[in-house]
Length: 263
View 1: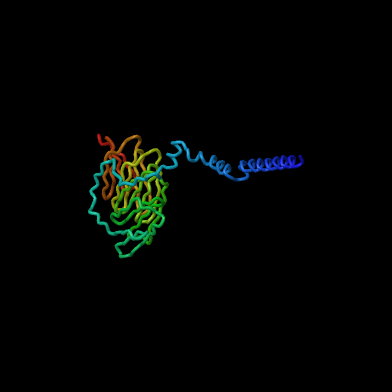
View 2: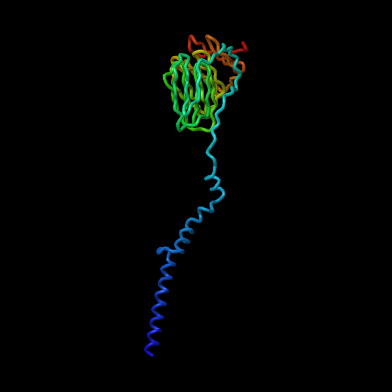
């Protein structure tokens, strides 16, 4: 009888011990297989993202389009022969410009991607994902400007000035001063760009701009809801044609004059 009670007591104790071990193993706080299942249950939502979330996470980086600018206004300017007087070559993580004087100017492109490059007349222009860069025959280094990472840029080259245009800004490089200048577009879009000697002519859907490059002076005329369909740059003046009106900018007076073509 005593032995029977002993074995019953021993069986009860062993059963209680194994029952407690099972509870501990089942508790995620104490590790074990159930803990792993618990961790997996917390990670499961990451494997089952919605199609829209997957599309956003897996979307490629935005593509930036940089193209040559095509004027929407007829340019009747009689340009002289333009000779490109400097050159550049792409090296290992660098661009090297060779000026007409024989001087070499290098720019490190480490960490930058070249979107656009061109030489014309007395200057060269680079557009990267970070910077605007230009060099002229009077430069000592690549002149750096900054843009705002917009999706579309258009580049217009003159022999003394270059223009990089986005939908919000115009970035003008002046080879006389070797500076970048920013012109804001105010509910307007670029229509034309021209450069003859030391003058630049720009038309938008709202205004006309004439820029004297050596002095960096800007002259502006509002179009008064008219559109310019043709312009012509000459040695002493610039003509902007709009319907039966002509706006003439005289270099000597540095003023716009309105002329009625119906008289």
